[in-house]
Image (tube, rainbow, N blue to C red; front, side):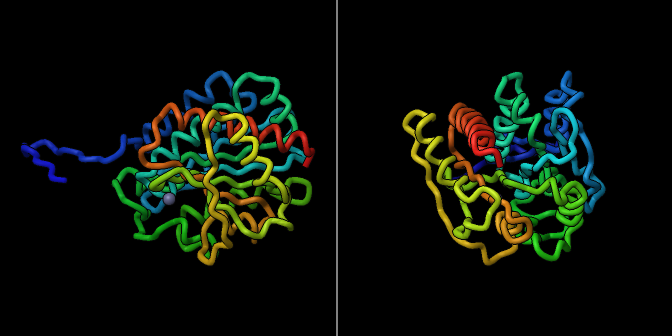
Length: 267
Ligand SMILES: [Zn+2]
């Protein structure tokens, strides 16, 4: 493909996906939390290498004492905005005014990180942060300030009676796919993947789950959730060209079914 541009003195931005900058992300979650301040708290995990905020939404109803956690991550990889759209739909469904959501948030707590790599996003990087590192290869030694502080924030909020049940990391790739861990017997919810994928196929018209299962040999978040926390870890990938209405639907149904499964099994 060839693109011809008439250059002027003004900068021109060329992007293959819609741009969702750190400011766009902030505008989105600020509006989302509006009128829900009693149970959606906007906090900060720290600052990126270039000093940009690392926001986190801390979501629960009642006391946070003894609540197990679900952790949501996105934008480790800057241009993967279709995964971010699924994250938006997923999170919106969790905090909407429904009896399911209400019951869920009275029992469980969500930590949602809407932009883990704000420097990379605003600089238009493909996979790296401002340190030139792929953040989804830093989940063992935490050399990069973004992952180090996200991990510290999570660690500070976990403990004996508040363990992580599930970690979902939203990305984009060629097609929709869920990358799961092969090892799952020891995980907090051993049958989660089987139950969840069955429920998605049942509740999304003409939808076939594409699951690729392996034990990660690289330090990615999926493995960190399992090896570090005995939690179910899944890389939730949306296709680069998946239509927006499909993403909205998959995001919403996958959130509802996640809540159903966890509540029905009383983990
Ligand atoms: Zn990715």
